[in-house]
Length: 197
Image 1 (cartoon, rainbow, N blue to C red):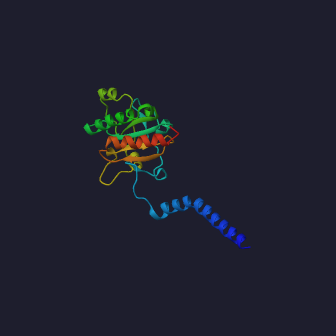
Image 2: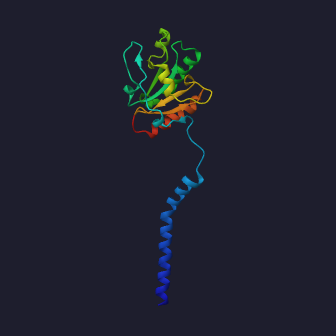
Image 3: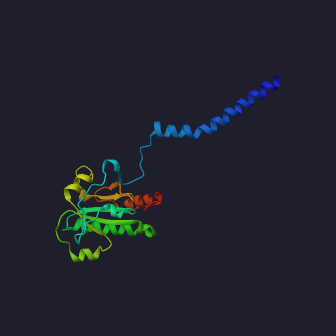
């Protein structure tokens, strides 16, 4: 009788131990998510909720006047910059940075399209067009664009680089004067994590 009760007690402890071991990961994840709430983020760019910024009609057209939509580039990651057709020095630097950021992705670079959204009808320099031949140059309605693209405080949309995912969702904004290595790291993570585009 005593032997049986010892076996039952031992069996209960073993069962409790197995239950505790199985429940430990769930309890740890619950504590981490709801109680500890890690504050460190591992992305450099600011994430944007695409539901708050659906792609509007931008009156987009190519340099030859042919109508186009950013949705026509679905299936690729888009890195956008915004500027006037004058393209001052800061604009040229961003065009160069976009091209280099794409090239830095190595064999993954074909998954990215670089797009310059031009906010006016000013003529572009032929030299500039040739120098950045791989960049999609699209004229858009500046007011519609301004209403769509979110900015950081005390900045303009022209200060940022934006990212649109392969499904056409605006999802990230890099800060003014972004550090290329950090932008590259974010883009590498996005490309690695995504099976689309």
